[in-house]
Amino acid sequence: MTSPRYDAPMGVDDGWVELGDRVFVRRYSFYDQNIGVVLGDGEALVIDTRSTNVQAREILADLRDLTPNPVTIVVDTHGHFDHAYGNHVFRPATIWGHERCVTFIERTGEARRAVIAREEPALAGDLVEVVIDPPDRTFADAATIEVGGRAVGLKFLGRAHTDHDIVISVPGTEVLFVGDILENGAVPSFGDAYPMDWPATAAAIVPLVGDGVVVPGHGDHAGRDFAERQAVAFRSLAAIAQRVHSGELTIDEALAEQPFSEHPSEDARYPLKRALAQLRGEAR
Ligand SMILES: [Zn+2]
Image (tube, rainbow, N blue to C red; front, side):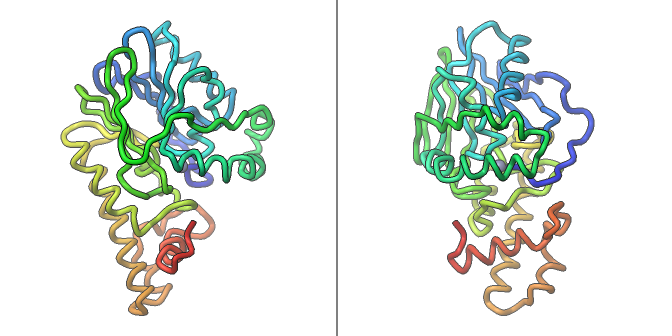
């Protein structure tokens, strides 16, 4: 789930962009979301499936620009609706995700369908037909899968935006898909986040990007500098939260210092609140 009331900048919907050998990204204007594709011999892998059957079918239609071959593998970066509610449209493809992606979707999927329909009225009608369909192949730390003779690496780097975000690499290219661990042009979403773990997870991304390209869940793809800047911001939030927790700063002093004050939610305190909840052992 991206931050609420996200305003997508213009310039999205420009079609597929090849970031590495047969590795593509496409930015959809709804939530300015990135969908990734890896083409192998005779088959294709899709990274994230969007919010509804209608949106997922749009991916399939757009894929005809790239290949006549079927999508045999889907990878969910995490279980938020905008990344996983389109899953069922891709069956009988295999769907991969972190093992806690499955428990997250089983725990939250149905309840959130109603919440999202209220928050995003434009989706309400289309959400009715969504079949919530979690990954059927999972892993805990890392997995290497294969699409049409080429390897694709899946890795869990630690808790961040959720407790089950994964990153996807394609050996032989310098492209890394990181889901909503990073967002470009929007404040990251903290609703299910672990802000005290997020700095280490974001920092672990930086060397994996190297001189290559990092594709966030939302917003333009970017380079290592972007990943570094976001890691610094997460570290700053966690440090400030720690100082509030230890009584060194008041909430108001912390809010003046914290790096996500431009949060579009009515409650700009949320990132800090969530960090404090985690420090008190109350985040789940
Ligand atoms: Zn998300």
